[in-house]
Length: 104
Image 1: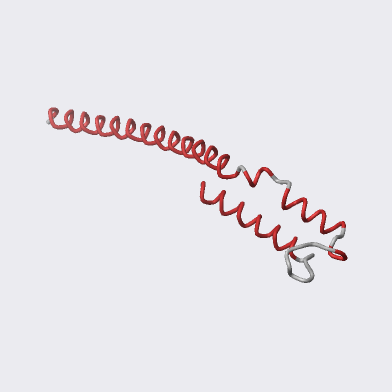
Image 2 (image 1 turned 90 degrees about the vertical axis):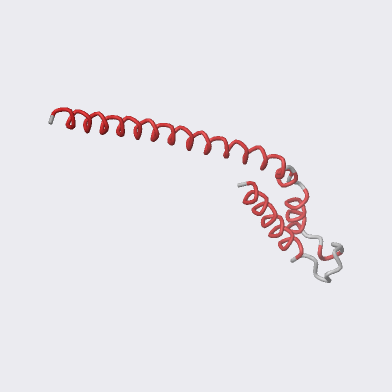
């Protein structure tokens, strides 16, 4: 889960960088003259003004732990219930077999 969150963030960051670099006509990494447009400013804002991507390793860790805990609790409860039913079924079968054996 944590890996998926981080990969998603890095993929989106790469996508934004590609979008921004489309406005760098001479490929020097600096936006000057005719490269400065409203669309370039929007793309630059999308790259630089997102704290969610910055804190993704922290929030991703928190969500991953919570997700793991929910999955673990569901697994534990289901396995406990399954074990209780299995014990009850085995005990009932054993008692039934004992009753049949003592009846003959």
